[in-house]
Length: 622
Image 1: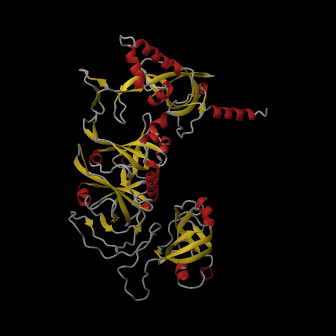
Image 2: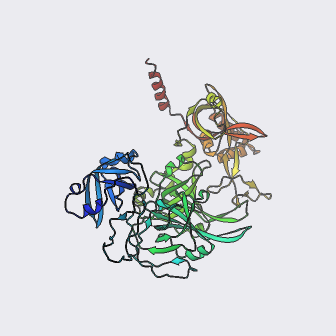
Image 3: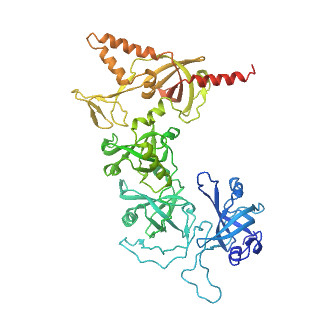
């Protein structure tokens, strides 16, 4: 037994009388079983919902906004003991709710596990005396079984042939007393049931190794508290693959809980489920379970995201490309792919690659809103997105943000794509990267050994004094996202990309430049790629290559082309830029050397630079 003097039967007493609750049970001492933030409406203050227990029953409660600092400071947490100084009892839609106006934490009692075995106040209570227990009597609750748990119904009839696995048919009246939120699931919990929506179901994946062969599929379950990944192997794959359908709600229990393998999943949960022969899955009709949970990143903000990270985006399909394919150099397998163009209200666009069967069966036309969860951010001279095996997608989701985005698109977004900001341009030719890269001088870059060990980023204000003219550009693939070097076929019939297995009539030339820059303190060599090269040279690599080709022709125009070619380099000299750079240490012939790559560049804003100088001068009180 606990030594904490909880005020037993507080809720039964309060809701069993017509008198003011503060007169019936003044200053009750209770335990907090849950604290949850409620997403505020625009312009509204934050609100918090808590669950309180008197050791016999638990009940949901709303905190008045003046009590928010107790939550925000970390005083009111799950398991703490509190005393209510002022509160009200309400009945909202036949649901008992407390409104907590004022409370304080009893710090003399430590944070602890659930005291007693409280039951929900919204469930029918067993009668005392000699009455026989009813089959629908409420089960015991734990600290996490407080999401409106209802008494279990008698077992429903089984449907379908599932090889002995338990799959049951349900109706709106199905109830489960021991329903847990997904956030509470762990290997230490027993006899739990979750009520969740399938927001993603993968194709069946077959595998072969030295131990044999098999198959598996995965699903992602979602409720209002979070999401969790579940996997079915072999027999369970056969039993449950057709049962579980995307966007449907199910009761799920008797799964094995494992530590999540993060290399195979982008789900924000430390645990994952594995279906077993004893797993029970029962359909449920409940529209209140959320359809999707997104941490939306605006397309214009992708530059702030590190390459390789997984993000959620909500955007409108602007263009749908043609179905293509690439052949893997490692496995020689052919993979179908489809490029789509996305836009959103940040006035930026980005390419997203769809792979495999989803690419072949793509049926989402332009002008539709689409939500992607867990797409991978890639970076090569810009930003692009790529769907992964674990990524999920929802077309025209019933979300407030999606409706608002569709309204923006219909009103402002149907304009030509050229009026949107190219993300490749944003990342390379003058827009801020969002990273707070420290401004360094060249001697500081060298003296501080920036880049030694790990990649480091810095900003540098410097002037171009020389550009190497050898190998200043290379012939690249014409694919939308492929930038690999192409080679001329032996018969001169075209240019072959080994990565895409495509032959092009002519290549797309891209810059790969080495420039020497100076500031007042030293000299540094920087490497630049295409978008930065376009900014520095004032023309594309295709245009520069054309000048070079014309300069070698035996005709009267060759001299003019040669003059224009050389002038392009000379015009680029003695111009000052703000470079955002990455320092990286590599090995060449067993010798370590530092390489500095320009991630983006922008001409100086002289008004801003003058303002900075004025601020520095003001510090001297001159």
